Length: 209
Image (cartoon, rainbow, N blue to C red):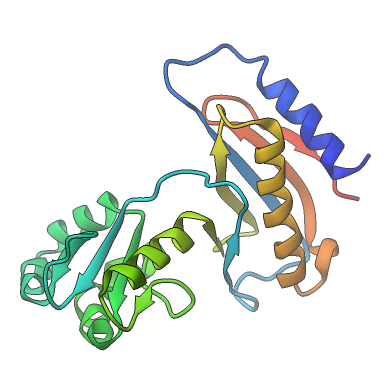
């Protein structure tokens, strides 16, 4: 059965679960096989057609900025305290930075941002100028992108919310799936199966071959 059809059936199945008092997230789990995570570190950004959620973004800039929560160069010394640093990382989904501050950002925040996968990166997260247009463009790009990192042979990513239309959720999933297949060394061979779940439901499993 085509993946598209399997996804329709999976969503129909998930929607039978009892409604919750909050909007559940739709989680996509892609289980890998014949794939060595250490040999092939996977860290890519994939553009999706429908925004999966509003991301909380903070910026490392030389001076305060009206368009985004800012951590200025002057504030850096506050974050020598590891607890404050960890709280900051938890509070935001994404961090962006002015290019010239990146060496200092790496020194001050790298030890916590790095392992959390939230370090501003050249692909998505570094601006030359902290002007309104550059920041706005970057925020839009971040909101319509998902970061896929494989630390284990299973990739889990929030692909949407349950109140989105099925077609939108499926389009997001297929975008991620098709781009991921291209990034894997052995294409579909590396994908064992796919699971789809809502926050509080059991996963529905799908075969890809």
